[in-house]
Image (tube, rainbow, N blue to C red; front, side):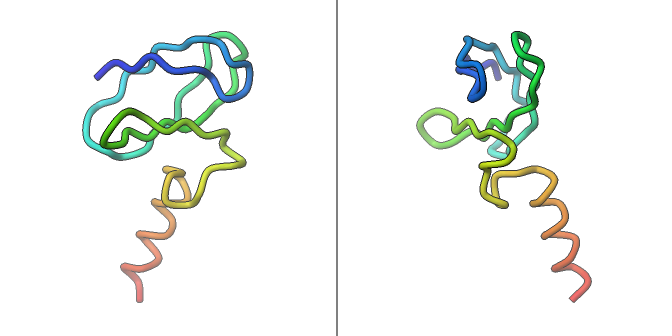
Length: 72
């Protein structure tokens, strides 16, 4: 699914393709080259700077948390 969003760093318009579902993904800004996080929500999308994203919205942190809970 294609989403039109603003980069949280440079505020330029971006088109991001999400594979579907509600899982957060990393996206790269085509204007400034920085990675940011995009997370589909019920009524649109949330966009975060990597350093400002909550763990549940950060794909790397979420993966670490889920794998750690499986080992308990």
